[in-house]
Amino acid sequence: KVGLMLFEMARGIDSQPVEQRELPKSVSCGKTFRGDFQLTKKEEVKKWLIELASELVERLDNQLYENKRSTKRGTVLFTAL
Image (cartoon, rainbow, N blue to C red):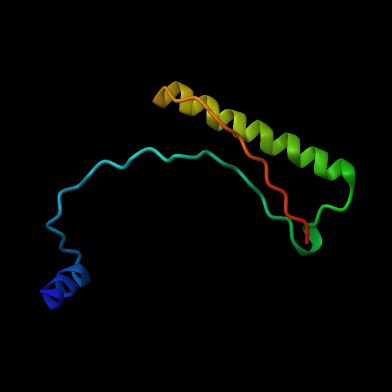
């Protein structure tokens, strides 16, 4: 049984019905700054926080418009190296 399944998978054969994806449970945006691109000044951090917050608001607005879903909780994560 497993051999047949692997044989068919290797050839792109799948008899399972196609199912619609569920909506993701979270909406996020982020950016990694490494090496020469590390943020070292307060002004740089502020600029990118505003940029990422703007992008996140746009994504949340799209969720509300397209899927009739609104935010119930928010989390902000910072990692300093």
